[in-house]
Image (tube, rainbow, N blue to C red; front, side, top):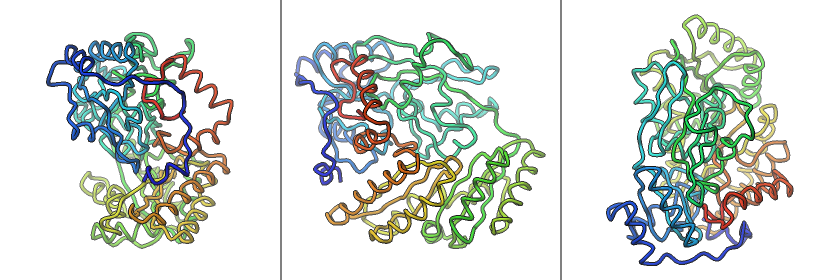
Length: 479
């Protein structure tokens, strides 16, 4: 898709710099650091590392390396810096904006072999992990500790990769995004220096000491350095968890309920929206029989008494807005069954057009603006003749159109590109953002300029130029 859209995007390079070619001697130098088995120039391996789950075309690196520790990352970064070779960090490859594409070639640092759990403190509610640790493996590791890590973007992404993209997901309405849950980062800078963003081994709950370097790297998408450790906040596993589903006569009623639930102060853990088109697709794919109406999927966490109170308060609000009675469940098996439609939404939409490609949009607006933008977006989808059911984390104003399209149909590709641009600009006009959780990557650089303004872009470029004067870190992304 990116190849077809590149002309219309007219992307301007962030910084100009002539990169050197990867030579046989340079590859031998890499092997001397990590060993023969941890360096590959095989095309099939390079292609696997030149694309994520986005629509952007594969741009393979020249070589892939698998460091085993921070010392090896630092030594190889110094080699790249000395020889002016680009560096592209790689986690699980589950990104959605082309963040791992090697636009200028270079060395892909696959971080999956660094997968230690460090410094778990159940008393202080934190843990430090290396970049090969994924969110699911962390929660498996924490299973007997009484703690868990709640940020859930859907995919079993690496936690350091989630920090790099400032990921969030279904639990963000209560527990926040990665930006709220990263305490400290160990980062290898482009020249090989190792930075601890909050000070070495610091694991405090809050600070007012100097600039917030940690949040500078959260969301930097690999353009400022390579994250080699992340210290994360943990939470107590709630005593009780209850899931619920209810349908509404229209989008306005569903979103009004969401706003009122939050205004009432109900500490809801998840509140997800699926439109009627999405519900129909989910019913067909999963063999379910939910009403084909705008629907909210909710989850409540807390003590038995607190959850009971939350259910009562939420139920009253939903009834006032014409919602159906709750279908609800407390035990794990029943909760999983209730959430099946939401969890399988991506696959349900793909099943609407077998053989076609999926693409997920990602905008976020103030929650009071959700009814307006969702109604306008649905009308735009119809007028544009695009299949794109809507699902969203409506508790924080973030929603997605999961579009299925035929990449061989140039007219359809054009219509999708024009639609996604209109959607992003519609969000910006409502004081929102062009990306709530997927990041900027390749495709949203022009939209970022419109969002933060020329002064904002210039400040970002100055930060980039200070930390990465040769523009070696993931060049061509974000700015």
